[in-house]
Image (cartoon, rainbow over all chains, first blue to last red; front, side, top):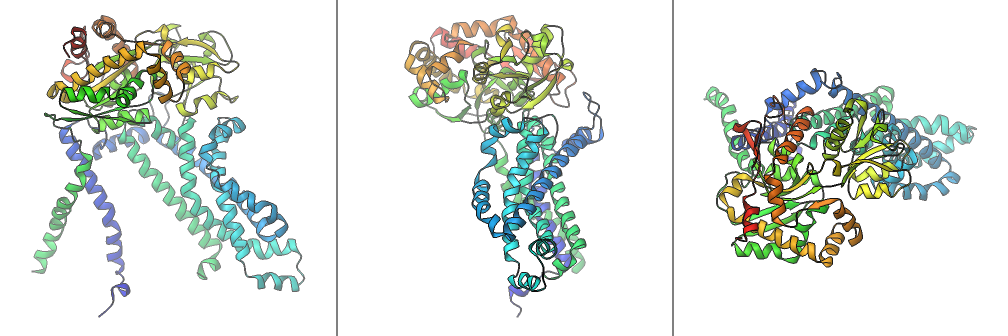
Length: 271
Length: 360
């Protein structure tokens, strides 16, 4: 008799099983929404799927009456642009600082405690300081993402750099490599796929800070729209926006994984 | 046998899923959906100068005393986020909630939750203001970005102010800014104009380069703080309305006459007595039910609600189905504005009249 822990579902069964929870959630929603609608036709908490569809139609497929723009796409564009800028800057800082501190003990000595301390500051708690330093425009939103995400990436890259086998570095040295060459030719190529890993892991946090930043002061963005229509409880707009954010986050994560597999096949084959 | 099984499998699955899920869905339905006689009620409020009496009423036991008198139980809950408190009320978690006349129209009433203004507590008489960094008159606002909480009473105040000098919202650009961050935002060079409410107004005015160019005392009686109660709950349970109204005017008397009570309210709202008195100075409190009843009965209230409905309709706050600003009927003693067949917001002075007559 085969033990439970050794039985894995066949591919079709696995796909079916993975869909079931989503179907159950949609069904629960449908039933709850129907029950609330039966009591109050105009209920806004759990709009029907038709109402959600008409909200999507209004936001994404028709130009806004006030500005003539397609609000949904404009929000998406502004948010993605902020996210990409913030995460790119954070990844760049993470790579440079993490690599330098990981490879050179003299740089690690002063930086490591500082990085640990900075990573423990909740960025949302120092918002007023951020405003005064970076203003209220795009810069402060991007900086909030950078501040929220880069300490994590720095610490991760530092750790990964120090985890590289000591023997490799010794070997490179016996072959006559100097510090600069070793960092550039031995350490950096091995760290880059790990940087992509770190960025993938930090995307959730980055979205969190993006939404928070857009809630504070802005005129567009996915987070802006959600907080704006929350003022009159338009769940018919909020729910598709949340689904869209989830989809975007999933897609970015998947794209990064494919990118990593494409550029660094050796990294994925050793796993 | 096999074909029968496969054919009926989806049907069985759907049926069993529905059977399992229906109880799961129950928490989403509102407990007070079918109004009937009940003896437990809940009220939510959030921190604001005109709603601090609810805190005092709760902590001093005045509300419990009146609830006992009518043999009911009233659960008073403070919610830190104002909009969230209204959303919770609209979603069915509370029977009563403190909110402004405008938010009552755009959130519960527009969401089909028929609400009655049981108590009209005060109106903003300077508590909401437009502040400029440069410039001394409202006209100077042309071309500037104005930071404010979009679609809130601040937005309404701005629209009314611009209207009063022949300008419109097209002459400025509005930047949605959270009320929690507006004071810090004003210190940055990006921000040149804000519209907000107290205590933030006082805080910003104490900074250098801050000129108040318009405030709510120039549109008196248009931003009204009320206690909204679900109309069906109130009709089925007049004792709930009586207990709340009785408690409210006992609190009002204490508040008007006792410095200690005002100091208590100030502290509970995160400031001190001095800060609280400063906010009260720009609030027209109806300490006496006589004034509140006269205010609700006046024809101006209907005109005000018409302005509010126009603004809400122009900004799409009345919902997609709304064809004009009168889509949602608003009942006032002076007459009904808008669609009489879809009345969702009511101003009813009858409970406050009982307070005047002393029959509570």
